[in-house]
Image (cartoon, rainbow, N blue to C red; front, side):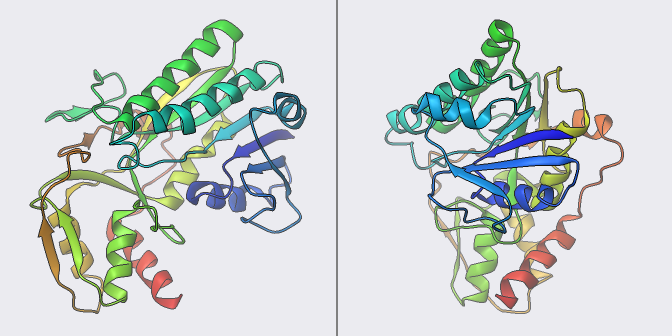
Length: 305
């Protein structure tokens, strides 16, 4: 039996991960979120509202958990572009409060979701986990800072971690209202008879990964050594330009739509090609969902809703 906590269980990744783990008889699961009630899964799962500034309550709730997934985030790359203090106040400081509580709670490992699309900065090279990092957005700077603090707490307090630097996720039930999820946004616009808007000329390179694949890889932390730390690019084989992505979408959807190209945004990374050879060679039994299959499934799901 392993005791697992999920911080941020009401987010996109958190909902899928919670639903994947809740019926596993080998896991004792505790869910944590910002709301007073669980928005994620059936009421049988243990859930509590968490506030890391309340150190005494947090320590009590997470004490003796073996592994905690830290999925909480209050921003996207665009959010803090004009207000970098937002990242410090809303993400970094709560994370440090959380780590201070972990230090006193006998937690063995933290699984942290970082950002493959922002921590490396812009580069024409394929990027592996050891590539030099030059983040230019407050979002990426802060994610990388949080990674460094995990390393600090490992050295100082022997708290281990798995860091998954995740690329652009898409999939069923993604909330696009905050500006995340280019594939889901395109599909929703198409089904709602709205134009698709592309910032720039459509040649920006991105990596796209299906939510079900993300969950498969995240759960490897439960099956592997808790007292060992790792960092992975959690990215698929699909490094595509937006124009290439639109061709795939066009081959799947039945509806007609119009693409409008607008000026590029300074907060967007023009090129990101990720090297996923480390995670593929480590977990040979996990295969990536072909992007056309994943998009087709997502499209049908949105269409039914």
